[in-house]
Amino acid sequence: MSLFCSISGQQPLHPVISNKSGHVYEKDLVLKYLRDNDGKDPITGEQLAEDDLIPLKTGQSFSSSAVTPGARHAARAELHPVVNSQEWDATMLECLELRRQGAELRQELSHALYKEDAAMRVLARVTRERDEAREALASVKATLGPAFSTAASTEGGEAQMEGVEQAQEEVGLPTDARQRVEETNAALSATRKKRKPAPDAATPAEIKTYTQTTTVPSMHGTKPPGVSALTLAKDSTIIVTGGLDKNVQLYDRATSKILATLKGHTKKVTSVVASPSLTEEGLPSFVVSSSLDKSVRVWTPNGNKTVYGTSANLSLGSEVHQLSLHPSGSLVASAQADGTWSIHDLTPASGKPSTILTGTLPEDAPAGTSNTAIAFHPDGVIFGVGSSDSKIRVFETLTGKCVATFEGHSSEPSASAVLSLAFSENGYTLASVAKGSQQVKIWDLRKLSNSANIALDADAAANALRFDYSAQALAVVGTDARVYQNKTWELLVTSDENGAELTGVEWSKDSKELVVAGIDRTVRVLSAPQAE
Image (cartoon, rainbow, N blue to C red; front, side, top):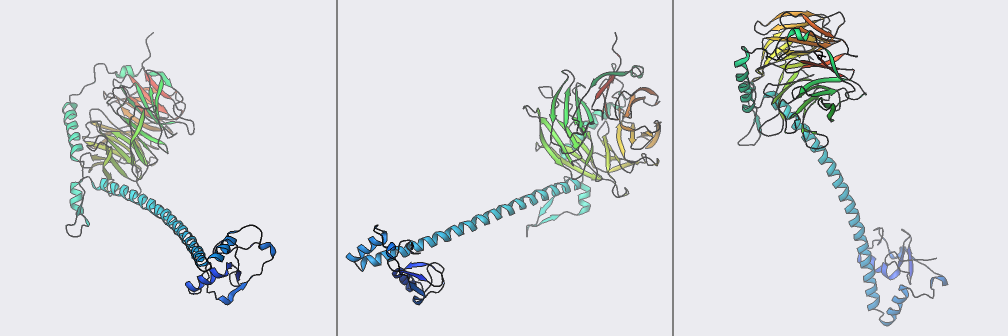
């Protein structure tokens, strides 16, 4: 049997065992510890009396011929029986105390690490809640307008909100954005009435000859397949598309290659717009996309292999259905499913794109009405919003006030959400299509009335429409692609070579080309046949 003292860790000369804890001790050491610590067991801390210590008798095997530490202690004790014994006992008791302190420190360290881990978890939660609160505050500020502010109390330092009436009076664009809108409107409206088709613009007679001349197949992925949004850039030589595959693509017609695939959205891309200005490399200065993931992303060239990177990801709290680029090229409007619309500044003084104004539908709009289409007037001073109640409302860009309401397609029992709006370039006419509607409706902005209706074929769908830049023709796409002459609304040309519904349509600046795209993942170019 091998016995070791629980205090010294050495083989005891006079071993005793506690009948309470079962620990073995050197008799002299444990008695000294009990005298110095009010009779507490050195290991368990329980009360222990001398009577609780039972002497142990060991056989011959315990006293081996090996020189053990205990034997050396005994040898020293024979020379200095008092001093060496006390010194040994004190050393062993001190070692016991050090071991106990070490155990306590390890336990304290364990507790400290646990508390630190808990604190980091709490900090992460508080940080997340702070970020959510900031986003909510930004949304509230955007709704009330940039002039809304909170003032610190001079006494208690508490934030106080100005009166609602005062805040409503101050709603509108910030000074910088307001100035850009006013300057753009002044420059464009001064020439609008005198604006005539460009000499090289396609005539209605030429448009009648249009046929499919170019196709760009296999755009976007196949899971799920389809092009859901379309715009043009760089004089129509760059095609920008959004897809059901959640990506945005830029296609260069000059090289017949995809310049970039922009990844970031987590749901279907619903709309895309591109900057009219170009970088030194000939790329659009920015691309803006919206998605059902409730965000508007601003992409800018980054000089890397990806070509473009996200410079801003604006979270709007609701699915974003459509975008429209302001004529100034620095503002973008978006229509949201929660019945709100927003204006975003792409070139603010702060340098980072941000939402500067958010508005809602008038109080007479049915509860749950969502905004599904949006378009700026060519002069940029107003914009139209189409909604799920089939109606069209016109808002002032500077103030966000609703200034006119058109019945839209609400007179048609089968019609629902307005899908697309288009202003003519002279600024006098607004065209609209709606889901389930059998008509393209034409609205006179001067008389605020429905001036004409273009009947669609039975069961035909219309998803998007655009006036050409010369205001001579209106293109409508859906089940097929059709072009009507402005004012007379004569059907000029029809193209039905698409393999699935068309979702996007754009004119080139000179109206020489009409670009369409749809669910068949193909971009098609309609133009006059090449002379042989």
